[in-house]
Image 1 (tube, one colour):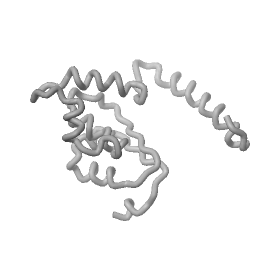
Image 2: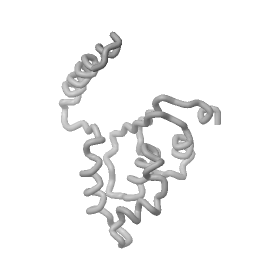
Image 3: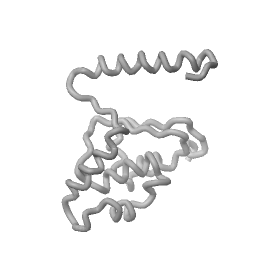
Length: 130
């Protein structure tokens, strides 16, 4: 309860698969936090489960993905069971928002991005606009 009283600038959840069950204590607590920005980090790939995908999106953008039933109406195939095709389409839509590690090149990619971030942040530190 005391964490809910704070207005956070960032809330970052590592091992984000822990909030796929929205009824869990951890997921309920995470969703109750007020934050300007939210980030999920996970090494677990998204599965072909529409409800679990909704739970992750609900944490990130609760004002857009507030209701699981409505989400499943929007993106559901209309049939019970496997939603593999629908979830694959959603993955394509979500791809620009995902940073995914492929192979052993993670250190090189992160180093390049850190240099870029440092270059972008330098004018801001000096009070100039980028």
